Image (cartoon, rainbow, N blue to C red; front, side, top):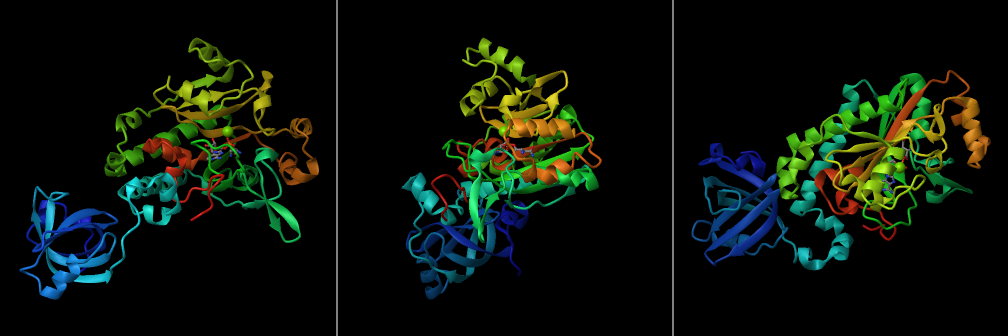
Length: 431
Ligand code: 4AD
Ligand code: MG
Protein backbone atom coordinates (compact mmCIF):
# COMPACT_ATOMS: atom_id res chain seq x y z
CA UNK A 1 0.00 0.00 0.00
CA UNK A 2 1.02 3.58 -0.58
CA UNK A 3 1.00 6.29 2.03
CA UNK A 4 -2.26 7.68 3.31
CA UNK A 5 -2.79 10.95 5.12
CA UNK A 6 -4.34 10.63 8.56
CA UNK A 7 -7.43 12.72 7.84
CA UNK A 8 -8.43 10.21 5.14
CA UNK A 9 -8.65 7.48 7.79
CA UNK A 10 -11.07 9.29 10.07
CA UNK A 11 -14.29 7.94 8.55
CA UNK A 12 -16.27 4.70 8.47
CA UNK A 13 -15.12 3.81 4.94
CA UNK A 14 -11.62 3.09 6.19
CA UNK A 15 -12.76 0.71 8.94
CA UNK A 16 -11.42 -2.84 8.50
CA UNK A 17 -8.91 -1.77 5.85
CA UNK A 18 -5.14 -1.66 6.04
CA UNK A 19 -3.18 1.57 5.54
CA UNK A 20 0.30 3.00 5.96
CA UNK A 21 0.73 6.38 7.63
CA UNK A 22 3.83 8.37 8.47
CA UNK A 23 4.44 11.33 10.64
CA UNK A 24 5.41 12.36 14.14
CA UNK A 25 4.57 11.17 17.63
CA UNK A 26 2.11 13.60 19.15
CA UNK A 27 1.58 11.70 22.43
CA UNK A 28 2.75 8.34 23.68
CA UNK A 29 1.92 6.24 26.73
CA UNK A 30 2.58 2.66 27.58
CA UNK A 31 1.07 0.16 30.01
CA UNK A 32 3.77 -2.43 29.47
CA UNK A 33 1.92 -4.77 27.11
CA UNK A 34 0.15 -2.00 25.24
CA UNK A 35 1.52 1.23 23.81
CA UNK A 36 -0.79 4.01 22.62
CA UNK A 37 0.83 6.34 20.13
CA UNK A 38 -1.09 9.38 18.89
CA UNK A 39 0.37 10.09 15.45
CA UNK A 40 0.34 13.49 13.80
CA UNK A 41 0.79 14.50 10.17
CA UNK A 42 -0.08 17.67 8.28
CA UNK A 43 -3.74 16.65 8.12
CA UNK A 44 -4.63 15.48 11.62
CA UNK A 45 -4.07 13.00 14.43
CA UNK A 46 -5.04 9.37 15.05
CA UNK A 47 -4.33 6.91 17.83
CA UNK A 48 -2.25 3.84 16.98
CA UNK A 49 -2.35 0.82 19.27
CA UNK A 50 0.78 -1.33 19.45
CA UNK A 51 0.33 -4.66 21.25
CA UNK A 52 3.29 -6.47 22.77
CA UNK A 53 1.70 -9.85 22.12
CA UNK A 54 1.15 -9.22 18.37
CA UNK A 55 4.40 -7.58 17.33
CA UNK A 56 7.86 -9.12 17.52
CA UNK A 57 9.82 -8.13 20.58
CA UNK A 58 12.32 -5.78 18.93
CA UNK A 59 9.66 -3.89 17.03
CA UNK A 60 7.52 -3.50 20.13
CA UNK A 61 10.52 -2.25 22.16
CA UNK A 62 11.31 0.30 19.49
CA UNK A 63 7.75 1.60 19.48
CA UNK A 64 7.55 1.68 23.27
CA UNK A 65 10.84 3.60 23.43
CA UNK A 66 9.77 6.41 21.13
CA UNK A 67 9.48 10.00 22.36
CA UNK A 68 7.22 12.92 21.46
CA UNK A 69 8.13 14.23 17.95
CA UNK A 70 10.03 11.09 16.92
CA UNK A 71 9.30 10.36 13.24
CA UNK A 72 8.04 6.99 12.11
CA UNK A 73 5.74 4.97 9.89
CA UNK A 74 2.98 2.53 10.84
CA UNK A 75 1.03 0.02 8.78
CA UNK A 76 -2.14 -1.32 10.32
CA UNK A 77 -5.88 -1.83 10.17
CA UNK A 78 -8.34 0.89 11.15
CA UNK A 79 -11.05 0.32 13.72
CA UNK A 80 -13.77 2.57 15.11
CA UNK A 81 -13.15 3.37 18.76
CA UNK A 82 -15.07 5.99 20.67
CA UNK A 83 -12.34 6.19 23.30
CA UNK A 84 -9.63 7.16 20.81
CA UNK A 85 -8.88 10.87 20.44
CA UNK A 86 -10.37 11.28 16.96
CA UNK A 87 -12.83 8.35 17.14
CA UNK A 88 -10.74 5.85 15.12
CA UNK A 89 -7.77 3.71 16.01
CA UNK A 90 -5.13 1.94 13.97
CA UNK A 91 -3.96 -1.53 15.05
CA UNK A 92 -0.22 -1.58 14.38
CA UNK A 93 1.00 -4.46 12.25
CA UNK A 94 4.36 -3.14 11.12
CA UNK A 95 6.52 -0.19 11.99
CA UNK A 96 9.49 1.77 10.74
CA UNK A 97 11.42 4.28 12.80
CA UNK A 98 12.95 7.23 10.95
CA UNK A 99 14.31 9.23 13.86
CA UNK A 100 14.05 8.88 17.60
CA UNK A 101 14.81 12.18 19.27
CA UNK A 102 15.75 13.16 22.80
CA UNK A 103 13.16 14.95 24.85
CA UNK A 104 11.33 17.56 22.77
CA UNK A 105 11.89 20.89 24.57
CA UNK A 106 8.51 22.43 23.81
CA UNK A 107 5.71 22.46 26.33
CA UNK A 108 3.01 25.08 26.56
CA UNK A 109 3.93 26.07 30.12
CA UNK A 110 7.38 27.32 29.02
CA UNK A 111 6.23 30.91 28.51
CA UNK A 112 5.98 33.25 25.54
CA UNK A 113 9.69 34.20 25.23
CA UNK A 114 10.80 30.58 25.25
CA UNK A 115 8.23 29.68 22.62
CA UNK A 116 9.37 32.60 20.46
CA UNK A 117 13.04 31.59 20.79
CA UNK A 118 11.98 28.11 19.73
CA UNK A 119 9.51 29.17 17.11
CA UNK A 120 11.01 26.65 14.65
CA UNK A 121 9.77 23.87 16.94
CA UNK A 122 6.63 25.58 18.28
CA UNK A 123 5.33 25.79 14.69
CA UNK A 124 4.56 22.07 15.02
CA UNK A 125 1.87 22.72 17.62
CA UNK A 126 -1.74 22.09 16.67
CA UNK A 127 -2.48 25.77 17.26
CA UNK A 128 0.28 27.09 15.00
CA UNK A 129 -0.53 24.45 12.40
CA UNK A 130 -4.06 25.85 12.23
CA UNK A 131 -2.74 29.41 12.04
CA UNK A 132 -0.52 28.48 9.09
CA UNK A 133 -3.39 26.76 7.31
CA UNK A 134 -5.75 29.73 7.70
CA UNK A 135 -2.97 32.05 6.59
CA UNK A 136 -2.43 29.93 3.51
CA UNK A 137 -6.11 30.25 2.60
CA UNK A 138 -6.04 34.01 3.16
CA UNK A 139 -3.03 34.50 0.89
CA UNK A 140 -4.47 32.28 -1.79
CA UNK A 141 -7.93 33.88 -1.64
CA UNK A 142 -6.38 37.33 -1.83
CA UNK A 143 -4.62 36.45 -5.10
CA UNK A 144 -7.59 34.52 -6.49
CA UNK A 145 -9.84 37.52 -5.94
CA UNK A 146 -7.66 39.72 -8.10
CA UNK A 147 -7.06 37.16 -10.83
CA UNK A 148 -10.82 36.56 -11.00
CA UNK A 149 -11.38 40.30 -11.40
CA UNK A 150 -8.99 40.99 -14.25
CA UNK A 151 -5.96 42.25 -12.33
CA UNK A 152 -2.33 41.49 -13.18
CA UNK A 153 0.10 40.47 -10.46
CA UNK A 154 3.26 42.58 -10.46
CA UNK A 155 6.45 42.82 -8.40
CA UNK A 156 8.22 45.87 -7.04
CA UNK A 157 11.73 46.22 -5.59
CA UNK A 158 12.27 45.83 -1.85
CA UNK A 159 15.45 47.96 -1.89
CA UNK A 160 14.42 51.50 -2.73
CA UNK A 161 15.67 55.08 -2.56
CA UNK A 162 12.36 56.80 -1.81
CA UNK A 163 10.02 56.94 1.18
CA UNK A 164 6.29 56.38 0.70
CA UNK A 165 5.05 56.76 4.26
CA UNK A 166 7.43 59.35 5.70
CA UNK A 167 11.05 59.22 6.82
CA UNK A 168 10.56 58.27 10.45
CA UNK A 169 9.92 54.56 9.90
CA UNK A 170 12.54 53.93 7.21
CA UNK A 171 15.05 51.13 7.63
CA UNK A 172 18.38 52.12 6.13
CA UNK A 173 20.78 49.38 5.15
CA UNK A 174 24.28 49.52 3.64
CA UNK A 175 24.35 49.20 -0.13
CA UNK A 176 27.96 49.02 -1.38
CA UNK A 177 29.27 52.53 -0.73
CA UNK A 178 25.81 54.01 -0.29
CA UNK A 179 22.69 53.45 1.74
CA UNK A 180 19.38 52.08 0.59
CA UNK A 181 15.93 51.93 2.23
CA UNK A 182 13.84 48.83 2.73
CA UNK A 183 10.48 49.50 1.13
CA UNK A 184 7.55 50.70 3.25
CA UNK A 185 5.05 50.13 0.47
CA UNK A 186 5.09 49.14 -3.20
CA UNK A 187 2.43 51.73 -3.97
CA UNK A 188 4.50 54.12 -6.10
CA UNK A 189 5.79 51.26 -8.25
CA UNK A 190 2.27 49.91 -8.65
CA UNK A 191 1.20 53.38 -9.77
CA UNK A 192 3.82 53.26 -12.55
CA UNK A 193 2.37 49.97 -13.83
CA UNK A 194 -1.28 51.03 -14.19
CA UNK A 195 -0.29 52.88 -17.36
CA UNK A 196 0.34 49.59 -19.10
CA UNK A 197 -1.89 47.18 -17.14
CA UNK A 198 -4.63 49.43 -15.64
CA UNK A 199 -5.38 47.06 -12.72
CA UNK A 200 -2.46 45.60 -10.76
CA UNK A 201 -1.84 43.92 -7.42
CA UNK A 202 1.13 42.63 -5.47
CA UNK A 203 1.89 40.63 -2.34
CA UNK A 204 5.24 41.38 -0.75
CA UNK A 205 6.92 42.28 2.51
CA UNK A 206 6.99 45.88 3.68
CA UNK A 207 9.34 47.17 6.34
CA UNK A 208 8.71 49.73 9.08
CA UNK A 209 11.21 50.79 11.69
CA UNK A 210 8.37 51.06 14.20
CA UNK A 211 9.58 51.57 17.73
CA UNK A 212 6.03 51.11 18.95
CA UNK A 213 5.61 47.81 20.74
CA UNK A 214 1.95 47.23 20.19
CA UNK A 215 -0.07 44.12 19.55
CA UNK A 216 -0.42 45.04 15.89
CA UNK A 217 2.98 46.25 14.71
CA UNK A 218 5.67 44.22 13.04
CA UNK A 219 8.89 45.63 11.61
CA UNK A 220 8.52 43.32 8.59
CA UNK A 221 5.00 42.53 7.50
CA UNK A 222 3.20 41.16 4.45
CA UNK A 223 1.56 43.85 2.40
CA UNK A 224 -1.17 43.19 -0.14
CA UNK A 225 -1.45 46.21 -2.42
CA UNK A 226 -3.50 47.06 -5.47
CA UNK A 227 -3.77 50.05 -7.79
CA UNK A 228 -6.45 50.83 -10.38
CA UNK A 229 -6.62 53.33 -13.22
CA UNK A 230 -9.93 55.20 -13.68
CA UNK A 231 -11.18 54.32 -10.17
CA UNK A 232 -12.08 56.92 -7.54
CA UNK A 233 -12.06 56.70 -3.75
CA UNK A 234 -15.52 55.21 -3.42
CA UNK A 235 -14.97 52.82 -6.36
CA UNK A 236 -11.84 51.60 -4.60
CA UNK A 237 -13.79 50.93 -1.42
CA UNK A 238 -16.31 48.89 -3.45
CA UNK A 239 -13.46 46.64 -4.64
CA UNK A 240 -11.92 46.28 -1.17
CA UNK A 241 -15.27 45.46 0.39
CA UNK A 242 -15.82 42.63 -2.10
CA UNK A 243 -12.27 41.40 -1.55
CA UNK A 244 -12.61 41.22 2.25
CA UNK A 245 -16.00 39.46 2.03
CA UNK A 246 -14.50 37.00 -0.47
CA UNK A 247 -11.46 36.18 1.68
CA UNK A 248 -13.50 35.74 4.88
CA UNK A 249 -15.98 33.49 3.08
CA UNK A 250 -13.19 31.29 1.74
CA UNK A 251 -11.73 30.87 5.24
CA UNK A 252 -15.16 29.97 6.62
CA UNK A 253 -15.58 27.38 3.86
CA UNK A 254 -12.11 25.86 3.92
CA UNK A 255 -10.89 26.19 7.50
CA UNK A 256 -13.79 25.43 9.83
CA UNK A 257 -11.69 22.83 11.72
CA UNK A 258 -8.85 25.28 12.14
CA UNK A 259 -11.16 28.05 13.34
CA UNK A 260 -12.58 25.58 15.88
CA UNK A 261 -9.06 24.62 17.00
CA UNK A 262 -8.36 28.33 17.51
CA UNK A 263 -11.69 28.74 19.36
CA UNK A 264 -12.74 31.48 16.95
CA UNK A 265 -16.34 32.67 17.31
CA UNK A 266 -17.35 32.18 13.65
CA UNK A 267 -20.68 33.96 14.12
CA UNK A 268 -18.61 37.17 14.15
CA UNK A 269 -17.13 36.31 10.74
CA UNK A 270 -20.48 35.30 9.29
CA UNK A 271 -21.61 38.92 9.78
CA UNK A 272 -18.94 40.16 7.38
CA UNK A 273 -21.28 41.04 4.51
CA UNK A 274 -21.63 43.96 2.14
CA UNK A 275 -22.11 46.86 2.46
CA UNK A 276 -19.56 48.05 5.02
CA UNK A 277 -20.50 51.34 6.69
CA UNK A 278 -18.63 54.40 5.38
CA UNK A 279 -18.14 57.19 7.86
CA UNK A 280 -16.41 60.47 7.22
CA UNK A 281 -13.67 61.30 9.70
CA UNK A 282 -15.47 64.52 10.75
CA UNK A 283 -18.67 62.56 11.33
CA UNK A 284 -16.79 59.92 13.31
CA UNK A 285 -15.40 62.58 15.63
CA UNK A 286 -18.96 63.62 16.47
CA UNK A 287 -19.98 60.02 17.06
CA UNK A 288 -16.91 59.53 19.25
CA UNK A 289 -18.00 62.44 21.44
CA UNK A 290 -21.35 60.70 21.89
CA UNK A 291 -19.54 57.53 22.97
CA UNK A 292 -17.60 59.52 25.53
CA UNK A 293 -14.25 59.24 23.75
CA UNK A 294 -11.99 62.24 24.26
CA UNK A 295 -11.37 62.87 20.56
CA UNK A 296 -11.54 66.10 18.61
CA UNK A 297 -11.25 67.03 14.95
CA UNK A 298 -7.61 66.82 13.91
CA UNK A 299 -6.65 64.00 16.29
CA UNK A 300 -5.04 60.94 14.77
CA UNK A 301 -6.53 57.56 15.52
CA UNK A 302 -4.16 55.21 17.30
CA UNK A 303 -4.72 51.60 18.30
CA UNK A 304 -6.61 52.56 21.49
CA UNK A 305 -8.97 54.96 19.74
CA UNK A 306 -9.65 52.48 16.95
CA UNK A 307 -10.38 49.76 19.48
CA UNK A 308 -12.88 52.01 21.25
CA UNK A 309 -14.52 52.92 17.92
CA UNK A 310 -14.77 49.48 16.32
CA UNK A 311 -16.62 47.87 19.22
CA UNK A 312 -19.59 49.94 17.99
CA UNK A 313 -19.64 48.13 14.61
CA UNK A 314 -20.39 44.49 13.78
CA UNK A 315 -18.51 44.51 10.49
CA UNK A 316 -15.51 46.36 9.05
CA UNK A 317 -16.03 50.11 8.75
CA UNK A 318 -14.45 52.59 6.33
CA UNK A 319 -13.34 55.93 7.72
CA UNK A 320 -12.99 58.45 4.90
CA UNK A 321 -11.96 62.08 4.27
CA UNK A 322 -9.24 62.46 6.93
CA UNK A 323 -7.72 65.91 7.41
CA UNK A 324 -4.81 66.24 4.97
CA UNK A 325 -2.45 66.88 7.88
CA UNK A 326 -2.91 63.31 9.12
CA UNK A 327 -2.12 61.60 5.83
CA UNK A 328 0.83 61.15 3.47
CA UNK A 329 1.46 63.72 0.72
CA UNK A 330 0.18 61.64 -2.22
CA UNK A 331 -3.52 61.62 -1.20
CA UNK A 332 -5.80 63.66 -3.44
CA UNK A 333 -7.38 66.69 -1.70
CA UNK A 334 -11.18 66.68 -1.81
CA UNK A 335 -12.07 69.29 -4.48
CA UNK A 336 -15.05 70.32 -2.33
CA UNK A 337 -12.91 70.78 0.79
CA UNK A 338 -9.18 70.72 0.05
CA UNK A 339 -8.23 70.54 3.73
CA UNK A 340 -9.45 66.93 3.67
CA UNK A 341 -8.21 64.12 1.41
CA UNK A 342 -10.07 61.48 -0.61
CA UNK A 343 -8.81 58.55 1.39
CA UNK A 344 -10.04 55.69 3.50
CA UNK A 345 -8.89 53.42 6.27
CA UNK A 346 -10.72 50.15 6.81
CA UNK A 347 -11.08 49.31 10.50
CA UNK A 348 -11.74 45.69 11.44
CA UNK A 349 -14.41 45.06 14.11
CA UNK A 350 -14.05 43.59 17.61
CA UNK A 351 -11.44 46.17 18.46
CA UNK A 352 -8.91 45.11 15.81
CA UNK A 353 -8.76 48.46 14.01
CA UNK A 354 -6.93 49.48 10.83
CA UNK A 355 -6.25 46.72 8.32
CA UNK A 356 -6.31 48.79 5.13
CA UNK A 357 -5.10 52.25 4.17
CA UNK A 358 -5.97 53.56 0.73
CA UNK A 359 -7.49 56.27 -1.40
CA UNK A 360 -7.39 58.36 -4.52
CA UNK A 361 -3.98 59.62 -5.64
CA UNK A 362 -3.14 63.14 -6.70
CA UNK A 363 -2.99 62.95 -10.47
CA UNK A 364 -2.52 66.63 -11.33
CA UNK A 365 1.14 67.67 -11.64
CA UNK A 366 0.83 71.10 -10.00
CA UNK A 367 -1.09 69.76 -7.00
CA UNK A 368 1.48 67.01 -6.43
CA UNK A 369 4.42 69.42 -6.61
CA UNK A 370 2.71 71.73 -4.14
CA UNK A 371 1.99 68.94 -1.65
CA UNK A 372 5.58 67.68 -1.94
CA UNK A 373 6.92 71.11 -1.23
CA UNK A 374 4.66 71.46 1.82
CA UNK A 375 6.02 68.15 3.05
CA UNK A 376 9.64 69.11 2.47
CA UNK A 377 10.23 66.51 -0.23
CA UNK A 378 12.73 67.11 -3.04
CA UNK A 379 11.21 66.66 -6.52
CA UNK A 380 14.49 65.21 -7.87
CA UNK A 381 14.20 62.26 -5.45
CA UNK A 382 10.74 61.47 -6.84
CA UNK A 383 11.34 62.34 -10.51
CA UNK A 384 9.86 59.06 -11.74
CA UNK A 385 6.76 59.39 -9.57
CA UNK A 386 6.25 62.95 -10.77
CA UNK A 387 6.70 61.87 -14.41
CA UNK A 388 3.50 59.81 -14.11
CA UNK A 389 1.68 63.16 -13.86
CA UNK A 390 3.46 64.41 -16.98
CA UNK A 391 2.61 61.68 -19.45
CA UNK A 392 -0.99 60.57 -19.85
CA UNK A 393 -1.99 61.07 -16.22
CA UNK A 394 -5.29 59.52 -15.21
CA UNK A 395 -7.46 59.47 -12.08
CA UNK A 396 -6.50 56.42 -10.05
CA UNK A 397 -6.79 54.87 -6.61
CA UNK A 398 -5.30 52.04 -4.62
CA UNK A 399 -4.86 50.51 -1.21
CA UNK A 400 -2.54 48.55 1.06
CA UNK A 401 -3.81 45.69 3.19
CA UNK A 402 -1.83 44.42 6.18
CA UNK A 403 -2.07 40.67 5.57
CA UNK A 404 -0.87 39.78 9.06
CA UNK A 405 -3.40 42.15 10.62
CA UNK A 406 -6.11 40.65 8.46
CA UNK A 407 -5.04 37.15 9.56
CA UNK A 408 -4.96 38.26 13.19
CA UNK A 409 -8.52 39.53 13.04
CA UNK A 410 -9.90 36.61 11.02
CA UNK A 411 -8.46 34.16 13.56
CA UNK A 412 -9.33 36.31 16.57
CA UNK A 413 -5.72 36.34 17.83
CA UNK A 414 -4.52 38.59 20.66
CA UNK A 415 -1.18 39.50 19.11
CA UNK A 416 0.00 40.00 15.53
CA UNK A 417 3.12 37.91 16.17
CA UNK A 418 0.90 34.83 16.45
CA UNK A 419 -0.46 35.43 12.96
CA UNK A 420 2.92 35.03 11.19
CA UNK A 421 5.39 32.13 11.36
CA UNK A 422 8.49 34.20 12.11
CA UNK A 423 7.53 37.59 13.57
CA UNK A 424 10.00 40.44 13.27
CA UNK A 425 9.51 42.95 16.05
CA UNK A 426 11.68 45.63 17.66
CA UNK A 427 13.40 43.05 19.80
CA UNK A 428 13.32 39.91 17.67
CA UNK A 429 15.26 38.80 14.60
CA UNK A 430 15.70 35.12 15.58
CA UNK A 431 15.02 32.41 14.62
O1 4AD B 1 -1.59 52.63 6.12
P1 4AD B 1 -0.29 52.27 5.46
O2 4AD B 1 0.94 52.86 6.02
O3 4AD B 1 -0.47 52.64 3.94
C1 4AD B 1 0.47 52.47 2.96
O4 4AD B 1 1.56 51.98 3.10
C2 4AD B 1 -0.02 52.80 1.59
N1 4AD B 1 1.11 53.25 0.78
C3 4AD B 1 -0.67 51.56 1.02
C4 4AD B 1 -1.25 51.76 -0.37
O5 4AD B 1 -2.13 52.58 -0.51
N2 4AD B 1 -0.78 51.03 -1.34
O6 4AD B 1 -0.12 50.68 5.46
C5 4AD B 1 -1.12 49.89 4.87
C6 4AD B 1 -1.51 48.78 5.81
C7 4AD B 1 -2.09 49.25 7.13
O7 4AD B 1 -3.46 49.52 7.02
C8 4AD B 1 -1.81 48.07 8.04
O8 4AD B 1 -2.81 47.09 7.88
C9 4AD B 1 -0.51 47.53 7.49
O9 4AD B 1 -0.35 48.03 6.18
N3 4AD B 1 0.63 47.95 8.32
C10 4AD B 1 1.26 47.16 9.20
N4 4AD B 1 1.06 45.88 9.54
C11 4AD B 1 1.87 45.35 10.47
N5 4AD B 1 2.88 46.01 11.07
C12 4AD B 1 3.13 47.31 10.74
N6 4AD B 1 4.13 47.98 11.31
C13 4AD B 1 2.29 47.93 9.77
N7 4AD B 1 2.24 49.17 9.21
C14 4AD B 1 1.22 49.15 8.34
MG1 MG C 1 -2.42 53.69 7.66
